[in-house]
Length: 183
Length: 450
Ligand SMILES: [Zn+2]
Image 1 (cartoon, rainbow over the protein chains, first blue to last red):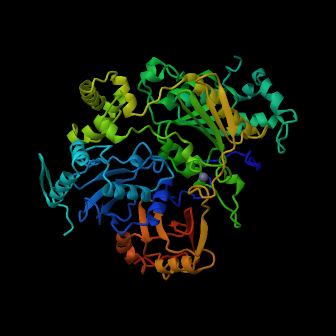
Image 2 (cartoon, chains in turn green, yellow):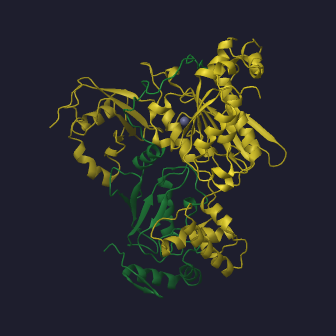
Image 3 (cartoon, rainbow over the protein chains, first blue to last red):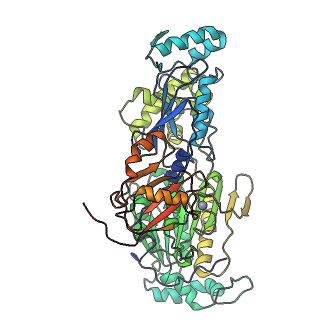
């Protein structure tokens, strides 16, 4: 045990401290996100975009799947990392309208590690891989867009047709989708 | 009660302190090595030792009462909240007529009136409103907080106040011990943190219970609980309908009423019962019912640790006490380990001497970090925080969009970038599991201004 109180003297306000009110230190959330971002090893189908490079807490992830139902589409996700990261997960919303069983028309995403299975050892990288996987293997078991999930479950051919239609820009049922193809 | 005199010297001689005298003025087999029995110990407690209590809620009221009755004579308390009706069952320093008033100010006044020998200074403010010059004045800080963000903030503050000797060991006199209490219903914990020496808040971040988050698809499609309906309105319906054109505020009764109405509609649709206004408030604000006896036990454990550290009469608890009184009483104390890779506390600033900030460019610094035997980094990312709190990303090669935006910084001198002598840079690199803090040290102290 270290001997702590050689400080049985009066402490005074404004006494010279380590920082003397001079140097600011990055917050724990800030340190952790810098670490996550600097070590982000993106798959070739993904890219990040920082509208303000000084703000590492708000950024975009762009996924362009090169296989599966969503091949040749371009999907943008907005990441908002809060001051309680990594105790709390980042808030992630899909900014591209997509016909997908696990993403609703407001951009909410049903991915377990974004909510109930989040844990502080996970990183931004884990989420990127999770989102990428959603495009390769849409999961009709956990639907957010129930109509899309039902079609995927009953008729994969029809689902594929609907996805293509939505990505080209057009109506699927009552809903209009903007074109999101790369070419 | 004999200590009714406002004269502290009378308080010192009062018979009420005889119990403490027995501990502080006599040698005992369990005393710490550096303990020397003396009347000075009690005097230190009563007149010199300055303790900050963060939070004047359920735990805070207990802590202030405990510390004041234990003889501490100079307490400060910070709390940004005001008193609500629902606090009164357990926050016993407050009365019905205090509703709406500052918790810190009311608590201070109550203690002061009851125990005139104890001076309590209230701060009706957020902890973030103060800087290191404020926190510097305290011998010990004890927290009764319900927020993890706030704990992490004060943890970071105390770590940043550590001073290091030239051989990078911590100057012991710069350590301010932090005693942290936390309760959630029938569960609680108390811990002793010696910043830089023992496990800090960030070392053990995974010990905090995660926030309850229901799967989004359950909320959206197969709600079974009233909570699912409330979460649905909070997460999905609020953004969609944007009723007040502002983010949802759990303290705004109009917002809560809106959520209550919509949640009730949704619950009826799915034949779910149990939506109440109180439940809505609880889910939106993540309220877990507080249990007065849990607060009392945890605060007592914390106050005892404050006393032990202040007087050196006995070893501190090492270092993490778990408590549960849901079913009988269970406690377990173990030593949480300091993590070698903790981003917050295994990150002593490393001094980087700079010959001339006007000729040294950022690229020179990065080259040095990669090529010198001392650092051997691969592809570092560098950021800094300026004195006004503004953050700046200096350079990051690994992220394409940031690289393009910050490339122009490479050829600029440190002076041109606005970096001051003593400024800290945060460096992350794949070669290290932690972040590194570099402290610039300019040999020539003048920066040319263009
Ligand atoms: Zn730590």
